[in-house]
Length: 179
Image 1 (tube, rainbow, N blue to C red):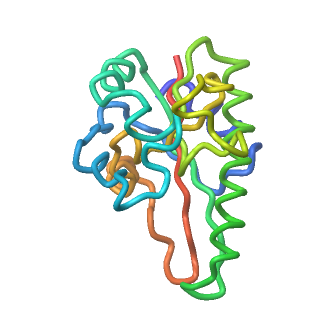
Image 2 (cartoon, rainbow, N blue to C red):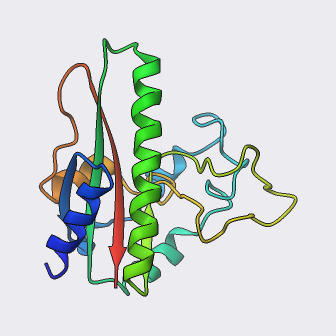
């Protein structure tokens, strides 16, 4: 893949633990995955511009992705004391969000077009303006891979990247497409 060494180097500089080239053809935007983002499954459904039903439709995402040639998958992996280590999970998640923001900023400086899909709900604002007012930061809003209808573990395995690193580990995965 063209650009992989450059993208990988930038991702490592931004703190990601694992990076893999992303074949854009492996991105399958599935309604079944998006359906997990409903009021019974996620507390953010219908409360954020970055979540369904406000985020881009699966059809729009499929169309946007067609314009990209290459990308990378990036992971932050955290150590947990046990499977109930909520503080460890939150710490790894915060590290992922920080790594994601740094890399996205860096890539936007280098590439004319960047499509970034992150982890979890956007946390830029203390309280999202949805649905009463427009997003304050539409160019920085983080939309999760799951909200985009991507089955993250499948995307990882389809691209040669581990998803599960064993007990007492948690992995958060994001992807970046560039042109």
